[in-house]
Amino acid sequence: MKKRRGWIVVLMVLPVMIWADSFWVGVFAKNTPYTGQAYTTSKSLPHLKNAIEKEWEKGSDIIDISYGHDVWMVLYSRGTDYTQQAYMHRRDLKKFAKTVDAYREKGFTLINIEYGAGEWLGVFAKGGKTKDVTFVSTRYWEEFEKSIIKHWKEGSMLVDVEAAEGYWTGIFAKNTGFKDQAYDKVEEWVDVGRDIKRRWKEGYRIVNIEYTAAEWFLLFAKFDKPREEVFANNEEIEDFRKTIRKYWKEGYSLIDLANGRY
Image 1 (cartoon, rainbow, N blue to C red):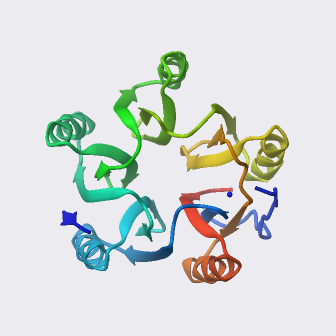
Image 2: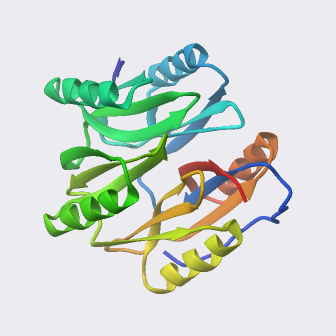
């Protein structure tokens, strides 16, 4: 735990090799509130803990975590409005949900979910602009879809999604800055780019990309001011690191991580 302390549309998809086992995906944007970024990779949760604490000491906050290729990748930024963060992991989803409630009683809100290596991992924060944050888990997609519609009608927006072990989980919140939302499920990666381009033309921007073991879940939102976005994919993490550095140099911030299959 630590205490401290945007849009012209551009489509970018790196070459696809259909025989690859899995690959990393990054969503980049300009005109974000972030003033500096970093990322760390770890193959074990104990090492992950050490890396996170070092970044917290530097004044950075976690904004996303992804698992793939037997590697945990954590994305950090400065310029957030969080005042304190914490994270936890549980193997059992029911125990995870109970722990989310326990953190809520301490004044923390859940901001990110990830599943990997048999563990459900949650990132929590104090501060931030969102309100009335709710964690939802359902056994089937049909139930989760009904939950999305229900929350939209109540004025809450979906901010993060994770599907694993036959469950769909999500974080809903109010005061997100989203004016409207949409989502799509796409089976093949080759169709993801076309779908994103279509949504961009409709005025939406990417909020979250998740691979659900059988298809890609794409979450979009509309903002007051459109921002310039690109997304890119690499099979090897070393190549992905080069891609991240490339877009950082061009003035983009990395806003979302994912790992999936073609």
